[in-house]
Length: 230
Ligand SMILES: [Zn+2]
Image (cartoon, rainbow, N blue to C red):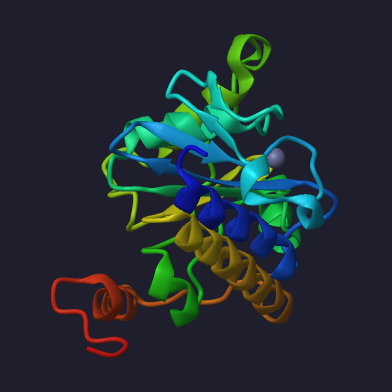
């Protein structure tokens, strides 16, 4: 079977969406890319998470054609593929309709950076992508969603801001691997929940000062990072 290790990793990350409480029914998907072969491994469309197996994952080329697998891929595959094409440093993508992150997306609000938990993973407010035009929605909806995400990140390294909110839809996140894309989906949901509660207590919170934001991001991700074990 083609890419068996990557199939296992992608299957585990998709099951992880459910384990972490990020999905209702089958509303979420994770993929990963094998950069050597240019093949993308993604969840099959509409299959419940408890029925997923590594063998049921679908392998695509970068045009979206099925290379290996008997099931149809996630309908969001063109969005994932667009992100892989634009951001060579990423290896995994996750998409969910998780409750709090999607609430911000439906309210058409970026997710403000109100605390250090957020700053540890997302270098500033998690942005809201632009609305798609009628033509984009009619002709190439999922790829256009990916294009809008790429435009939104312009000038920002993808791993400094490993996620966005798509308006009236929900979050997309990414990382070095499928597992890290899942981790960022979990963190994004948690910081969205924290922001929701913080905004309920104070509708105009100060937001995290820029120097604290920089400190938290750099101690985990900068050239001189010191978080965790050596
Ligand atoms: Zn969706």
